[in-house]
Length: 257
Image 1 (cartoon, rainbow, N blue to C red):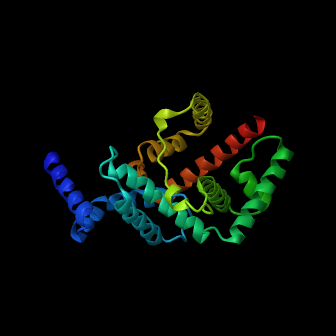
Image 2: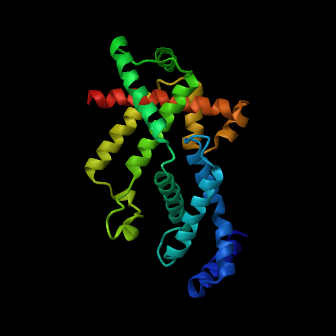
Image 3: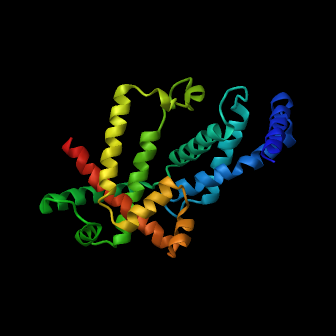
């Protein structure tokens, strides 16, 4: 059966590559649409609820179509691997261009960061989310949400690629061969992984389990909730709390470097 499906897909690719057959293209898009759903769920779990998942899916579908048009079938690279990069990149770029985090939210995050630093200087230790919430007089859930939004906006910033270059279109998507890391890159990666693993060990059991299921097993928050007998909102809260703790712990590690 697998061989038969492979043969059918090869025929679809042949029709698409040779004549841009619309029916073949449509069938290939349908076959790989689950990739879009997957990335929408992963990215959607870390951004504000007011961002439409339908909008994310639309951005992802544009990335998938772009991948279909630019994929070189003669190369020894699986389309789903190539398309995953394109889909994720399209969603991230779309979010960045739309500036999904309002200016008011950015200012709120900066003010909160300042207050956290001020509180921790007084306490001479990490402050818990509850202590921060009490200090700034805002609900604990708002603290989690603000920190998570700010964290994700930084991820977008780090992931941002140069757009001013005339060759931006041709260079905007690069697949790096991770097997060819320099010794320095490998050393830094191993050190970071050791630090991260150590910090994760400081989380409680539920937080470690949720992070493992979400990032290692790649399950959605909804599925994790069903497995643990908890609501999706509760799993989201545990996930946010874990990220909050890791961010504070790792920020302190970087300060001490």
